[in-house]
Length: 258
Image (cartoon, rainbow, N blue to C red; front, side, top):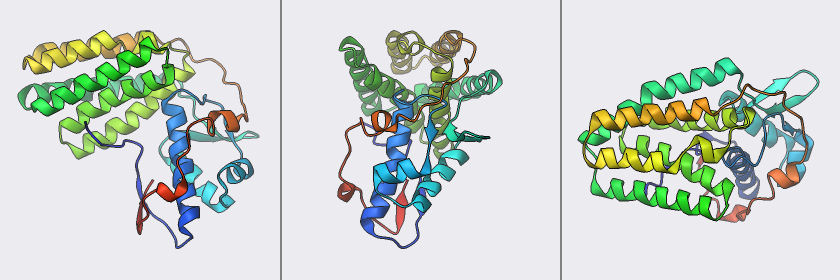
């Protein structure tokens, strides 16, 4: 299966202890994972001192992570609130889906022309995992597999610019779904994923593009108007409720993946 990690970013870090650097990387990863799996809501406040305490890092390291998240459009700075998880507006949400409608039909058309059997099997494994997560009521896991389906399509097209773009668009879509109170079972329908892969497998580029457009439209149509976001500071539950890997397991190098 594709090992592409859409949440990995390569950055250069200043000389620091391996443990501190690993914890900084872990903090970034946990925040992004929480957004992807709909564990953390738009409007959630990130207090520097609280994050520093939770991940046992300095506030300087916390600021570095928050600055990167802000550049990626995942958090925003608001007067009297500080840094909060971003809540895309109605226009921003519209822009996200317009971009995806331009990109993803092209991706599946390219895969109809050139897609290995291995990639087809990988797609089917993702769909199977997503379906099993839905059946078990594991909503957060189902959301992750659903996003992985779309990112894996971009990865299989072997276009590095699109891989990066789709990673960012998928994350922004997660925020839009959260801000607009969309049901994950309604938005990314497992059957529609299966139909798209069947069209790719049969090299039917017109059907694949049509199905992808319809799929994206279904997701957008499931959204409600953005509601006022409620701020929360429940970072213990939203971040540390996830299984935490030991910082020592994070691969260290001069160029860090973050």
